[in-house]
Length: 175
Image (tube, rainbow, N blue to C red; front, side, top):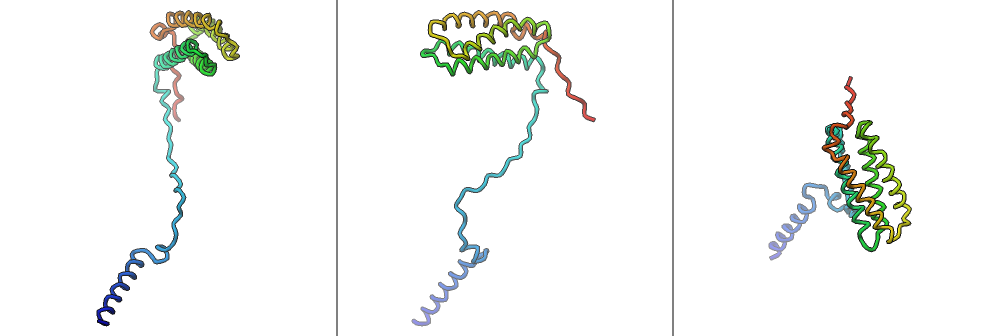
């Protein structure tokens, strides 16, 4: 039996040595690995300018639709109870910004026709930004906004404005 125990002991020893040595060195196997999260690889970012691919009409339509969205958000914010000043201030400033972008896309004659509308909207925006409107003033502001919206849609709808847009700026030629 001693010989049998010796063979078993030699086999266990051989398994232990082969298991610990393996493909990597013993030191590498017994070294503690860091537990922290690995740093994420930095992605390669290459921006492409798609704004040059848009025609002036596409740009006008885009800003027109965004203005229409923010204008309806402003009307909805004024109709909701209780009044949320942060909501109507944000919607008003975004709508005004889109109007200014639309004016920049129009040729001189049509842009001048938009100026009075833009000025009255800027005054209304300043009033809303102060946040000093009461519940009794809201119906008058809503009515004014609705009238402005009707006039704007009648006079500056994208189909009516497509002949009055600034031409597309050409990119400089590469040398």
